Image (cartoon, rainbow, N blue to C red; front, side):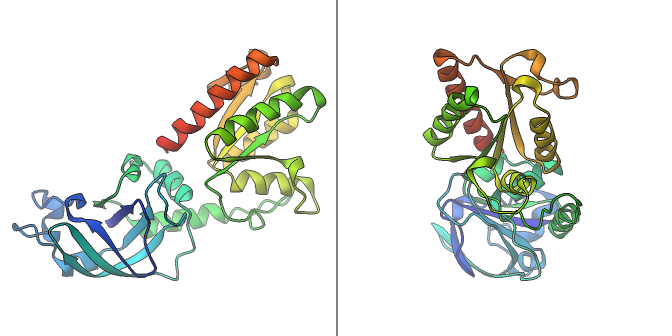
Length: 282
């Protein structure tokens, strides 16, 4: 078990507060009865025994990384409950989006991350972090995940063929992404590493969402789709024809578009809607 504490404004280094009415620890549930007495007062001894994960609400204004540690004291008031906690320096930094992806992968509900509250989750938090570390220990020989950098919750990467005929497509995708307050980047927008593939992998690894244009069945894009899927990224597939989608990807929904003014306007609207849906339902 672990405490999950979600706050719109996030959490400071070692103390914070949460509305008392948002403490969803029901003493009538047998597995949670030790944490609260019949009068609703939290049992601090029981609270201290299990770890805590503190994070900013999805769409909130606080830090983009979670805190993992233990609650050390609690003071309940009629309106707000204040608490102090210590963080575990032995746990590597985890971004909000990384935790959301981990939760999904291991069958945990992520719907609760959309609003401020305190609940107890019946899962081994440190096992979850261990699984995350094991996943990050992949050691490719052609590129490196270690050089990728930290995930950025507002970054959308675009994987597509390079050609003048697709310039307007990229512009429409940029417009869609910018309209919802995010940033769209393509691999040719940056030069951070000696090898192009490392720039591509780093961009995908840092991105919250990856848009992949499969038009003309470009093999580079298919390779990049595979990298995105391997990293557990939300990948949005787009294509100009159904035939552009390879057999192994046809079980995945995609957006079909026409490369003309009207078609790109529709594509831009649909991309913005799809990304907003992903952000609302991580």
